[in-house]
Image 1 (cartoon, rainbow, N blue to C red):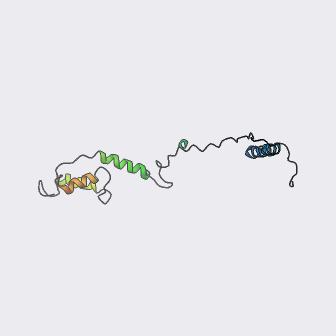
Image 2 (image 1 turned 90 degrees about the vertical axis):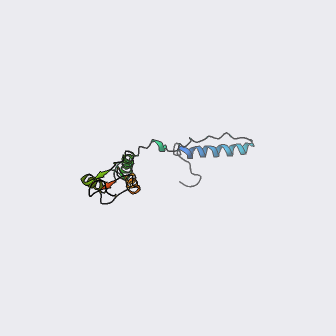
Length: 138
């Protein structure tokens, strides 16, 4: 099809058809010397609704990784820290069990039930902890 070739009816649809109709109306109004032209408006484009997406990727572990995701694990650590209760004075085997629980992963971390609050109480002297004997130093 060349320039000026006839177009089959129904070959132009949608926004292109509305644009072509508006051009024809504008040219006809200019030729007739009219001040106003009634133009057709295309159907408004609605933006995507981002709130309707059900994205649970933050709650599922990354592919090939066992265990909870980092966000879920962090929320569990925070919840465990909120349940902290000061152990009081502990001696001997009880003190060893408490330290083993606190350093279970090989290092004393700031998260979990025996995390920051336990470390703070231990370093500030609020907890009396003695491995050798009953009531000595911390």
